[in-house]
Image: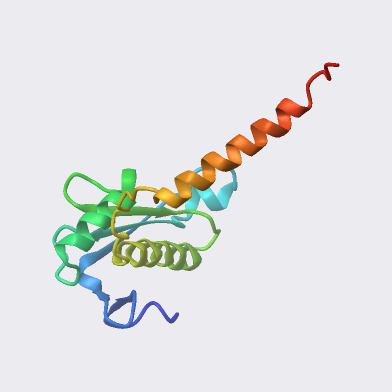
Length: 147
């Protein structure tokens, strides 16, 4: 087993472990070229995480997770991740779980506080205007010389 998957669930961070009963996996046939393997073997994985009913995540984290998931989130509050990058079911399963972990980790980070507008100081305004006047004087000196 990988470091993110365990017997009890999916380890997201030191404090967050998503239990297996909040995850469900279905295996479907992959689309695209691949011949007989694609037509016979269900290697693609659909991983569903019931984020809306999760007991592990706080309400703020759930809201951020559903916003970050975008179109992968359903109206019922589930996050649906499809993985069909690889040819084997095991690697697609690990890929889907890893992508879910990355999504939840991103949702665990709180957004930065909003920026507060500040007024420029009187000294900085004065220095800016002096610099503009100096540049204007240099450009005026480039003109035609008069006798």
